[in-house]
Image 1: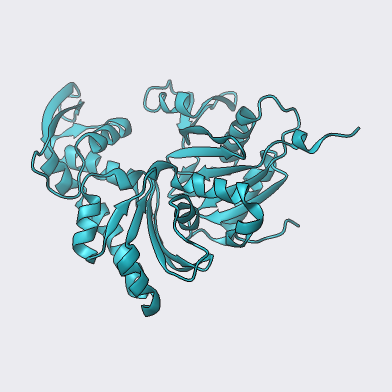
Image 2: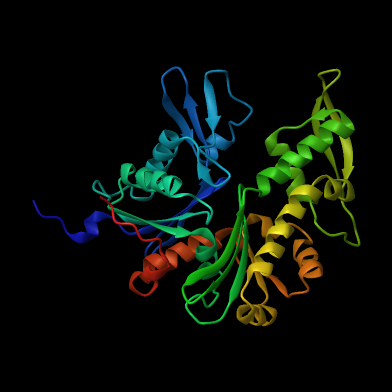
Length: 343
């Protein structure tokens, strides 16, 4: 029985993020952007929901249905669940093909070990990929942000995701120096939860903390400091309670994770070869990832580093667009992938 190659399914790039998974399919662009969450029925071991539907269930499920995030700090912690999630997303994208066996480029944090990279590859193969390639997230983000990664000039990218922050200087198709810290949007949410619990005696859920961060979170003071009402459970009475909170108070609460991100940027700059440092003063630092949208973060980084900082055009999609370019221009960009033949 002979199949045409088109039948093998289109090649795809996957940004397997702690918070969201994005899929880019060759010739079609980004076709999927869903939360990296899987809801599992512990009685039957069956998957109840994946992605957006599963995220809506966080904190609202009966005892036997658990919403699991299979990645923590950018690393697969629940391998079986991650495989099932990846398979679900690949099949969702290739609905019409019975024999979808695409080549898949998966983006992973630059600090991942060989064992962790193998776990990602295994998840890809078990999910039905014909060949799995790994690309380091800062490299993918740099390509997606349109930086000249293959040229002999230095470019610097700071990718702030849900679980990790990746800082890297790239030149000539490789990462010259990089730092990966397991701090990102999730830690900022946790800092908000801890602050509100300590100062207001109020218990917040993850989703509420994320909403507060997006509504009034900032890394630098602004002219008009907004404030908002937050609802949570009073720790003493156990009843729902509402308090007002200001942007300044939230900025104070998230100081620690923001400082850790800034330290990572400074450390990477200190380790950068002097020849490339000169390039960086001209080209500046590109901010990508969901954390790049934090108000005033560019201003704060500019203040600390004395360098031009720009938030790229589409920060949430930089990594998957970079992986997508590797899929589209596979022969030219193959050199940026992490090589490892499958035995």
